[in-house]
Amino acid sequence: MLGISTGSAQFIIHDVLGYRELCARWVPHMLSPELKLNRGRVSQELLARNTDEGEAFLRRIVTGDETWVHHYDPESKKQSKEYRHIGSPCPKKFKVVPSAKKVLMTVFWDCDGLVQCEFLKQGSTDNSDRYIETLRKLRARLTRVRPRQRPSAHESANSRCHEKSPILRNLTTPTLQSRPCSI
Image 1 (cartoon, rainbow, N blue to C red):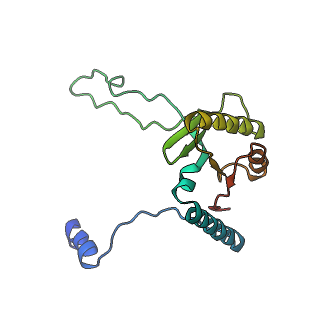
Image 2 (tube, one colour; image 1 turned 60 degrees about the horizontal axis):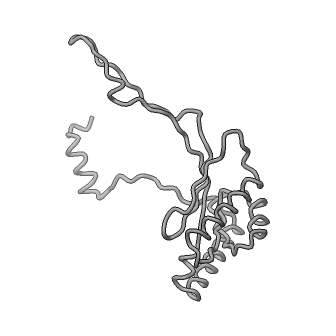
């Protein structure tokens, strides 16, 4: 079309014009002025506590999140081997897509690594009762694993706000608000 090779075109784009091929990255968007103000306030509060309490504050933070984990049993290369005649076309192997089988995973971690990982039982419902039970298990685990340290729980943005705050208050755990990412 232009009468130049692909290599020459790449040289001009990258070296002469200085363009780089970049992938888009996710950034928080659609934050209302109120959410932006709250985000700044929470950040300032965390910085102030870090300044006052130092490293000990950061080491006490335990945060968590929930995600859906898709699972499937892919066929290995050895399992998909077939004997074919020399003139036969190669067998085709299609990419495996995640199946409809999925399970909700709740994971908690701190600065030292993974603290607790829990999967929602088949047929169970993700509700406030399950969340209370998960936090009780987390507290018991933290008492066993980190006996000298009183954790500060970080509220996950994925958990429903109207359910989690009263639960955390009942467990008498000091909590930190999370910064909202988006609406």
